[in-house]
Every structure is written in C-alpha cells, then in structure tokens.
Image (cartoon, rainbow, N blue to C red; front, side, top):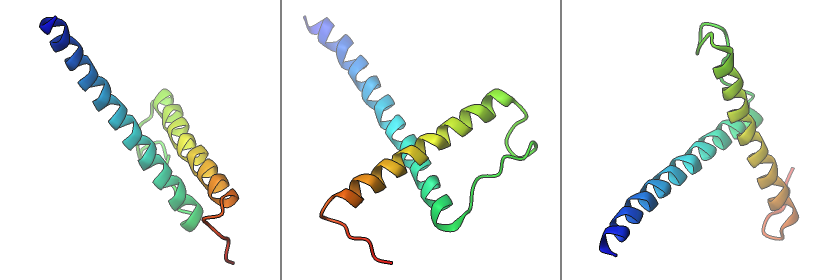
Length: 88
C-alpha cells in the first residue's frame, strides 16, 4: 500500500505541475491579448522573427487566440456582474 501511495504521489505532483504551467501559459496569452486591445501592440510574425515552420506559426496563432477568448469571456462576465461599471 505504501508503494502504491508513493507511485500516485509522483503522478499527482507531475499533474499538478503540468496544470500550473498550463494556467501560466493561458495567463501570459491573456496579458498579450490585453496589450493588443489597449495599445494595439501585437507580437511580430515576420518570417525571420520567430520561425519559418508553418506548423509552429499556426500553433502560436491558436495560443494567442486562447488569450483573446479568455479576455472576451472575462470582459463579458465582468460587464454582466454588479461589481464592475463601465466608465467612458
């Protein structure tokens, strides 16, 4: 029984670490989406800037799209709650 607990503890620790890294990645993507909306600055996707591999560029676009989606959902939830008000 102790051996089984040691095995599962290692797996749960790795799963927790993976979840933490995924959450951090979404948070960074959301920050980049907020920068795009407030300042208009976006990461450069010129051919020489990151990579010439089209698969990686597609992956980066999807990654940044997740941040845009999280930003949209956050604004929608904040706008419908009573805790926030819109000032123009």
